[in-house]
Image 1 (spheres, rainbow, N blue to C red):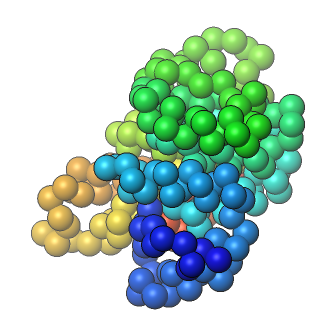
Image 2 (cartoon, rainbow, N blue to C red):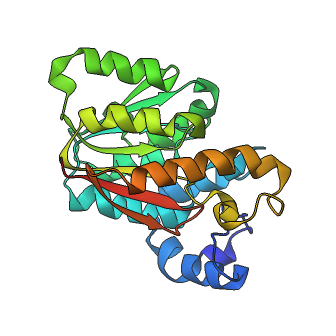
Length: 238
């Protein structure tokens, strides 16, 4: 049982009214269903000084379900960190599925790589060490990539979220899903400027602007859900 293991801080306590309620959700429905490789990677990542960057396990659970609901086989991930969301995607897609994983920092990816290899899913991953916009633009230079991806998960620099979105609306097929992480930015999107902690102010403004744009985009159906630090689920409809 998770509660019997050494206590590991959650990547995010979520945006619920109490830590106890969030822990109840994790202990009751998330941790009992979490595959052992993901549990191991979450524990390893907890020792990282930037552990809060990791995908929250409750967000990971719904992402895994979405991948399976759309029968995702060809996916994109922008922002890998130690690979929690990457590993859960690799575990969720078929044996011949592929993930185009883009991150500037290979060092963080290699923290989780031994666990990914042990899980037997490394062959599904094409890791590209690069800034995301040039990498996405290179994909778009090949016409066969347009509409060729079933799913994308974005957890990278917030200043470029809309730029990523514009490219993904070409790369992801109609009916496919794009998920954006951190779209409630620690709850600061609902705070006043004066009440927002200084370290959150820039991200708050970028996130508010992205949320406004995505809500008005007729190309997608959306749901902004309070998993982890907030995730926006987009289904491309045109």
